[in-house]
Length: 224
Image 1 (cartoon, rainbow, N blue to C red):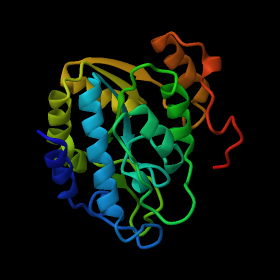
Image 2: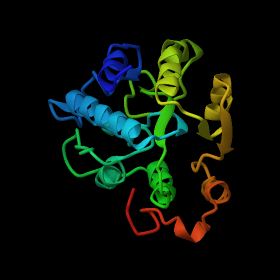
Image 3: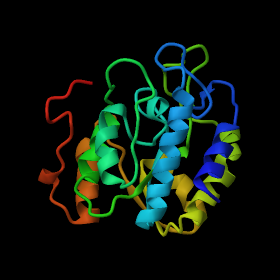
């Protein structure tokens, strides 16, 4: 498996009411070359993960319309692309959309912890696309069982290819899914819906880092 082969396999999947950021272009927000830019971003990210010897995945559920739909990168919004470039050597992430960078609350919390780590994890999702409600592309919904089956093999290949040893599941959906791979799985509450304190406490315990070191963009006065 190579980054190019993996990203190409992702880009070939087409599903109803699912935005594939590696092949689809949003008529409202995207630049004309947005799908190409997101493929390039993900390829560079995977190359960096291999080079760094990343052995842990932080796994969320799926891409959100304010975050991964726009960047093509799990748990990462446009606001954190420059910081992501700094944390993953050899990358140069580019915004694929028009206008100012958009921030997302979940990504802000993820990055509040990630910037405190010496070796960052690979950020990934159970379902690596953006599922949305019919006729409402800027909404979020959970993937279906049928949709999940279509990406299961790719997720397994990614984990084996990168020699992943541990999965930090962000939320119960990711936790239940991750158990199938026979790896160590640590479940942390998702920061959405009032879970910020539990999320930070869980990460603090896992990485032995005091919570006061976790300062999100929201804490710094960034509007969402």
